[in-house]
Image 1 (cartoon, helix red, strand yellow):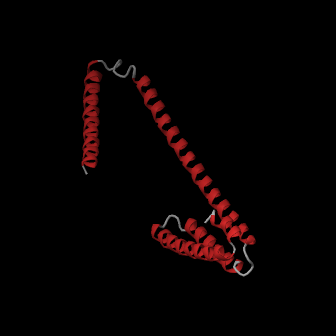
Image 2 (image 1 turned 120 degrees about the vertical axis):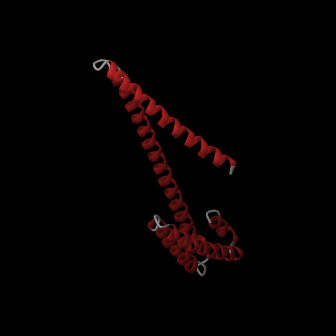
Image 3 (image 1 turned 45 degrees about the vertical axis):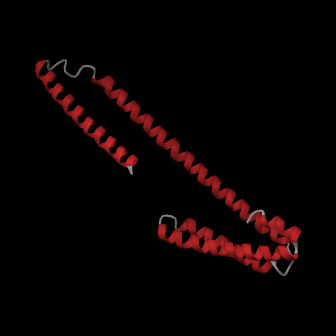
Length: 162
């Protein structure tokens, strides 16, 4: 709580300081313009250029950060898809009687994961869909453990990705 209060107090103090200095600058400019109307605005182009240059730099950093977060998110999705695909392909090494149930569970898991991404702006819908994902993950885990008891070497390949 102390850090939040300190941060808010600092931000408010900075805002008040900026307002005070802006008002002081305005008053000083009015006095200078009244005293020397022709030379009052000399040198302001340099300041304008510097301010716009800094704004451009801030915008560039913003876009750079957004692009890197987008690429990281895309990479995470690709890794998840590859892991699901690898685990699904490894179902082929299990006994034939255990494959249909696990394949159906994987299909439901994949459908739920797709729904999570489709419902992404709605946090409540995403949370509800993630609960379904967790439940299906539990079913896959239970089925994979049961398959391991009957056919250990192949199930270990499957359990690496679960």
